[in-house]
Length: 172
Image 1 (cartoon, rainbow, N blue to C red):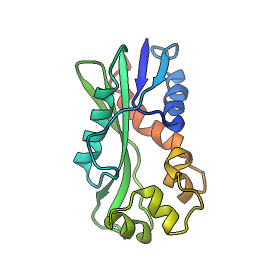
Image 2: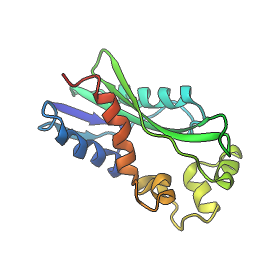
Image 3: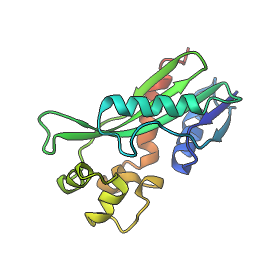
Image 4: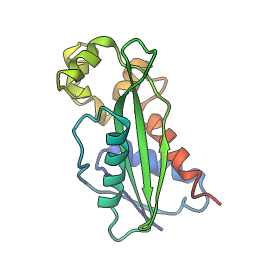
């Protein structure tokens, strides 16, 4: 089986490579990362945009494969939280006919990060500007979830959560 991951980000591609080893029907698959467009803003700020980004990624990566996988992180309004927003990661799996979705757990960013995002910054820039990291490419490795959990939940493992939930619809 051939699976295209709708990203050239090593963290996303490796999350897929590692997790599918736990699924007998997928474990011998050939995995390839492909750069795709999301069709949404760089920093999705609602559930609709997060789902649309994951779906568009998966659909745009569906070339010469059996399955394609798109992941899109997003921040969405969440009542009764300190900042009013929480972060999720949406995963879409596409088989050429249907989409299968999963969502990771959610977490809240610090208020100063949310304030910067509301001013138009993406999470990479917001974490750097808020002096929560010295790196300017947070999304490529540990992710904001890794920073906040002191790497107890690295970004790769966070991505696996949404993928695992989407795979519940494909595993027989």
